[in-house]
Amino acid sequence: MISFPLLRTTIKSNLVIWLIFAAILAMYLSIILSMFDPGMRDSMDALVESLPPQLVEALNFKTADPSLLGFVAGYFYGFLILLFPMIYSVIMADRMIARFVDSGSMAFLLSTPNTRVKIAFTQAVFLIGSLVLLIAFVMLIGIGVSFSLFPGELDVNRFIVLNMGAALLYFALGSLGFFASCLFNESKYSLALGGGVPVAFLLVQMLSGVGEELSGLQNFSLLALFNPSEIVVGGSSVLPSLAALILIGLVLYSAGIIVFSKKDLPI
Image (cartoon, rainbow, N blue to C red; front, side, top):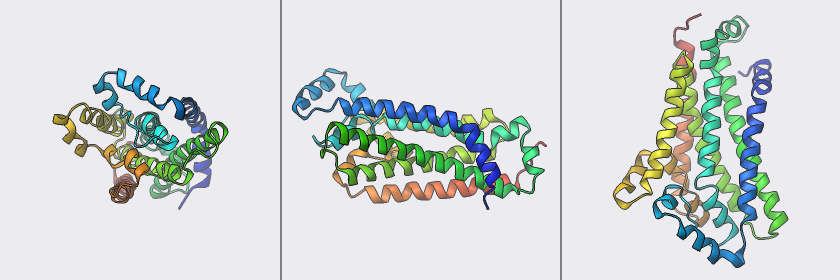
């Protein structure tokens, strides 16, 4: 079902982009972890409280508990993990199918013994795998930096669960971009849907935290299914939310492959 020559080519052509985003995330996570100081927790809270409340709520700068895990969940996984991997997933999803069709390269791929289903499935495997590896890399960096700076402070098991939640979020978001890439023959339309909807989710998520009157907006954001604070404290809504992300991802990836296998192509 997987075309390994195509998979190798896709990896080579997108490796630099992956490395750039991995480096950015590793840098930000390392900086945030280095800012943790149990003895200065009150000072950090005072600094956050000095910011406009609307900004703090919009960026989800909230800590579930005073531990290192609570700190990183609030200041990194509350917003930054939503921003940079989202940009990566939008770029990569478009490059999987729509960019090939738009540039005319899909005609070459279809001239090989590979079927449309095999091509689409291979590209989906790359997209899923690269997003999972990106989050796994961030997780390992977090564990390494925490062990170096604050030995024994990090709850590793719950930190792993936190990153599993982030990976499942991007399994779902990536599937939306992949579906758009399979649906449209031009990159501009693929990016408009595959990028526009996640950005709208992010804006809705930010607005929902600005005030009580807008809090209901989070029900319209897929990002609400990933709640770092709930994961840290072991909330009862965690498992249903993660299950929903898995279901959304499976449905949209499958739908994308089916749509691409049946649609007319301008080749």
